[in-house]
Amino acid sequence: MKPHAFDAALALDPVAPGRYAGRTSEAYWNMVGPFGGCTAATVLKAVLSHPDLLGTPLSITVNYAGALAQGPFEVQLLPVRTNRSTQHWTAAIVQDDAQGQPVVATTATVITAVRRETWSLSDLPMPVVPRPPEAQAMRYDKAMAWLDHYELRPVSGLIPQAWDGRQHDHSVSQLWMRDQPPRPLDFCSLLALSDIFYPRVWLRRATRVPAGTVSITTYFHAGEKELQATGSGYLLGQARGQEFRNGFFDQSAQLWNEAGTLLCTSHQIVYFKE
Amino acid sequence: MKPHAFDAALALDPVAPGRYAGRTSEAYWNMVGPFGGCTAATVLKAVLSHPDLLGTPLSITVNYAGALAQGPFEVQLLPVRTNRSTQHWTAAIVQDDAQGQPVVATTATVITAVRRETWSLSDLPMPVVPRPPEAQAMRYDKAMAWLDHYELRPVSGLIPQAWDGRQHDHSVSQLWMRDQPPRPLDFCSLLALSDIFYPRVWLRRATRVPAGTVSITTYFHAGEKELQATGSGYLLGQARGQEFRNGFFDQSAQLWNEAGTLLCTSHQIVYFKE
Image: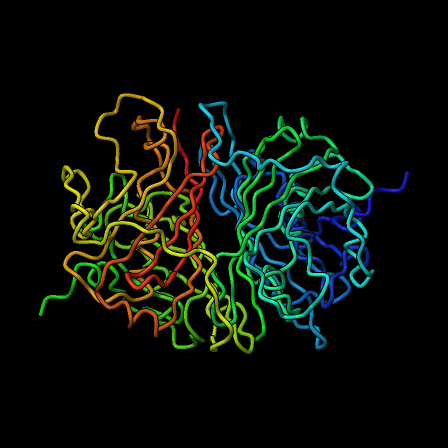
């Protein structure tokens, strides 16, 4: 059976301890590099493949230092410190430049943790929105390959239909989403989904200025149990901008499953051009 | 003139390119290590001291892999990649263990950027709260040295006065704050202030369970101009928990100056014990 495009994109070959060879995916290509969520997921995939791994993902920060070029790359990993129940990783994605010199395209830190059941509570109940079948699947021009691999059903804050520069009164978007074709949720696909929102500055300004994520941080609230309970169902994603200032803005996002369980929260700082 | 305790705590000696010797501060001591905001500020101080620095802080992620012991440490820095207007740093704080072996206590990534004036807008107006003189300065037992160096004027979500386990109906706190004695705001002190909030789990549960930050990410919206406009005035800080689950919760925070300018947003994932 042909693997899911997402699994193919994340395929890594161990070449030495803590070094994994990969290749950029045409299927998840964005405009000048891979979809950032796919790049982040590739780092996480390497961590989850490492023989010394302790626990499941708790936190990841990925810094996009430069665009990955089409072709091979290497993920380099170090389990810097392993405690009783947490493990701290540093990571980088490195690619050879035209002169064959290795260049860091991405830096990252990852924390994994052994989690035990404790008192738990959500302070962010899932917003009440129409259910997935009532939300119309998004249709978009096929400019970006990666969008073909997601089913997106916006319920509010749709991408502006007219780039008329009319300032919108908020920057909140809500949408149902899942892999296309459906694929059982795992930590890597959850991470990729946390980066799915288009730049908040486009919504706020109705102006399609160049914009790109500089750094993303995702916190995992889900463990294996919550992933299994989600299966290949939809996630409700919500994203909102906080401050747009002097070339950068930050946006915060939450992802719930259909049962209303908050699976992860995510934050990013994004470059935009005037 | 005696330097401010915060400047003394952040004193670093360059010992080699990208290596800075420091020493933990008794003044900013928490329970089992330094106040995490002070540790984060120390990393940022090293970056800002580096001769190759480009721009001002945009984003920092600090991962607390282990508690710093009282005594000397070294900040190790690498400007991994410098682009036209952004610069990506990796950093670590290293301390010798009892056997004289270097151990990583903290990992971090930092992004600095040259920022230009652009279209700007805030999607998070400052909440309407009583002004600093109307908010009573917090009085607390002197269990933690670092609290002596901050003036905290809570306006809502005070630390529970009774640890009676009565579940609170939200996890939001708002307070005015500044260095004590007052000190003109800079990037390092702003970063430290972004970590000032007590663990949200204490408020939500009115139970003082052991808790500690595992990773913090702060996005800087302020540049030099906004710092200067703030001076040694108060900042309004607001923090809120999002999800408490299986030993960890995340909290998000915003810090405005008295004029209502959002200076930074911050997120952290925090360990708590049942």
